[in-house]
Length: 436
Image 1 (cartoon, rainbow, N blue to C red):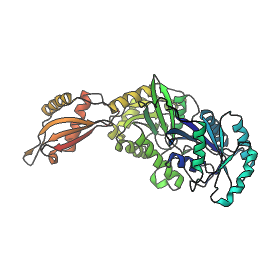
Image 2: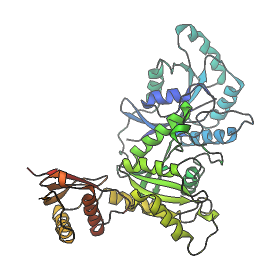
Image 3: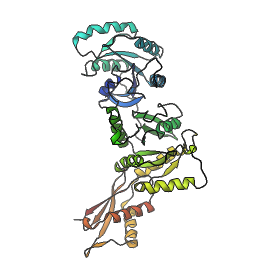
């Protein structure tokens, strides 16, 4: 079934993100009564009467010289290009503005179906006010209330009429989802743009520019990818505004959605404590992890620089000893071509399953190398091991007494598994169980 792409555009503070979240059925876009909160395109999946919808929320379009206005307008124009249908949002409270008229003229040139939604019609008395919006030349206006959910069904019914449901191929279930995480201004958005070869998200030297998580699809060597560019994760003590709180929450959500996480570090600034905190989120979530050192071109280097930097990473991220490290530059494109292949490798390891017979050969060899420990005269007996799940690979070890299974011996067994099989980039979970 083909997914219908719908772009929601309009000037700032008319309720685009509220409608976006209503249709998507979850709080994805940041909703706050401050103009300009949504800056990048934001994507989400929705559904109406069996029709799959891919929603594209955009920053508010303005025609002045305020910061980010030109880039926001460019993002909206790209969203219009991607869309099958456009919903133009206006507000009955403000009436028809000059900016509304300019946006309407812009959309009329797109040759795409445009539905005009007049938001904030929260009571019947305001119904009569919508007729002024006919002057925008976009056919019948649809009165809606994002706050109360009124009229949205009529809007969706018109979408269904314009694009009736057809039987088509389902989306590829083999798509690899990966997220870029890191503290603000390490270059995540620049990496996204460099990988995709287009200006998909706004890039700025101002820390914290990206506030929305942006899902983008691309293909490489016949493999499909979904890349999630997350908002920069700030220290909890600095998350004072509600906007920043939702950005952190959404970053956590992006990690949960991904199978592989790219931890982005800034080579110029080195490793900070917040980098370790960010990495801990992904490690605790049990995701495949690749450490990306960005802005590598900016360093003055000799023959020892990379080895010294890698040793420093290993020392400060001991819990990520399994994660491969890649030194790249979004600016010069250095080693960017290695990222997709490395993601594929880590994704395959993340979902790798080992036969029980092979596992128990490794277990027997491990016990010969390092016999199971004893405690207070009682000896740990390890009977067998089996893999119970993937994503991440999880193994159950049957023993006589789980109290005797020290975490150091579990770590030893995990290291033996790694030596026998390729699990680079993915954590391994070892669970001990008493044999009945």
